[in-house]
Image (cartoon, rainbow, N blue to C red):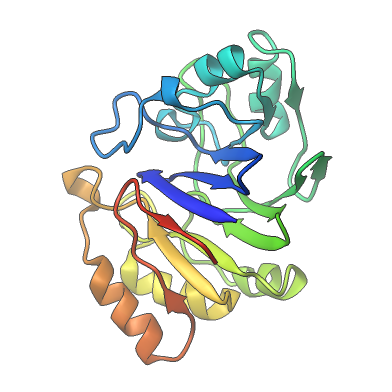
Length: 225
């Protein structure tokens, strides 16, 4: 299984046959590694409704026939444009042909560009024998420990570190400690000036504390857990 960082908070998970996209913000993303039309995923998973996360979901899903998983309020909005939409709420799990995705809490805000207010989520994805936890946009909160314990073992945590709109790299070190993933891939940083940070310093602090291995990916780079 490969994880490809597409820039900002967007990732592609693939096992060679199946492609799963998370938060495909590509058009308008200055760090995007690919164009939306280059991707044909079986599924698109969304953490929340901000434009830098919903991104190109509708255009990709329409063209590729992708299934979409999003919290119920976003799902209801997307059902006006798309056919294959799943609508869990926090705590709900959707099982598809390739694996499953569970929505877990994240502390943030979320309103779509069409005005749909919704609750942000993290995503626990079971895919190709691995457990991948995309934290979504969140601050540091103590229940990350509970998520880490309940979903253990977590192979890879995809973790925001940019600050301003989410937790910064200092709080993210504690988040990594609470979750206890085998590996951490930082995201949601350096896309715009407000969220510029030092990912290598984050890596150094996490690894020096013996918490997790940190894999810093440039947009477009791949990692096999």
